[in-house]
Image (cartoon, rainbow, N blue to C red):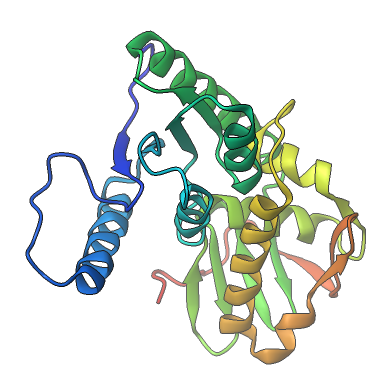
Amino acid sequence: MSSAATIIFAREDLSIPGAAENAASAFDRTDAVQDRFFELVDRARPDVIVLDLSRSPANGTETILTILEQTDTPILVVCNPEPSLVHDYRTAGAADCIAAPIDIICLHQAIQHIMRVRGGGRAIANRTRRNFTFAGMSFYPERNLLAADNGLSIDLTSSEGRLLAHFLSKPRVLCTRSEIVELLYGPQRSVGERAIDVVVTRLRKKLVSAGGDEAQKLIRTEFRRGYALIAEVASLPQEPSAPTHAQ
């Protein structure tokens, strides 16, 4: 790689190749395997997840959505290059697809492309450096930290943080779906609607956790058009006394 990258390889059931298997029931094992996978993702903070769907394509889209419900790490899918499968995986939120069996050169190029695109999306978000207060909450984009007036603080993922900062920089203004795609994934990137919806849904849940049930109404959906944040928004000092940890 031209730059260092942290990569996690996983199968369709989210087991890690080479990891020890246990003898528990199929149901218990599925839960344990997924728990270990997400613990590893949380600990390693990978740049890319390489997901091998070459042998089990049937539930591939559900696996992609399961991953995206808990992390915004981009997913590179290894699969049969059948156009309908590739389309389904991209629609579910995969950053890219490469053909099985893995060609190391193609893998290298795909990971570098994902990281370049990811960097472009972050550059767009970095234009906003203000801290915000809204609806009984404060948001600190530099730390991706959402804090409630009652002292509760919640960590946002990088995608959730970029999206919330964007909403707060233009309250009550419609943010189109294409605008959000460019914000989260970089320019010239095509992803499915469900991938965007997953990020918005995660953000909504965290807003409710911090701001209560009324916060469910903060992000308004314009069907097939995009989203708008409906709240009075004010800027906070650049270096306020922010919470030091999240719960």
